[in-house]
Image (cartoon, rainbow, N blue to C red; front, side, top):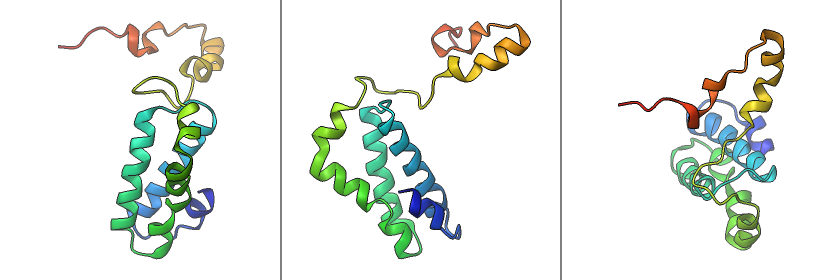
Length: 118
């Protein structure tokens, strides 16, 4: 998938952005942070790239992933978290260095601690 993202000429947005998103989803799945929603998003990207890309590179970019899902879906699903959404990265880990530098704990940085909005 990284090959397609790297080789995209950038002319059409579906290929330029879609291949990057697809690579990101694959990294997330490989790290064990994927969700069933991510699989649905990958399938949506497949349709988008096939229908809206201007060349064969963009329209064929999702083929390895979709073929893998089609033939080995249980293997993918075993690595998923049982949640509708799973963040692609650990926010606390990402903020750790900044917190050390500033002496702040940023308790408000967590979605579950955010005040309810009307």
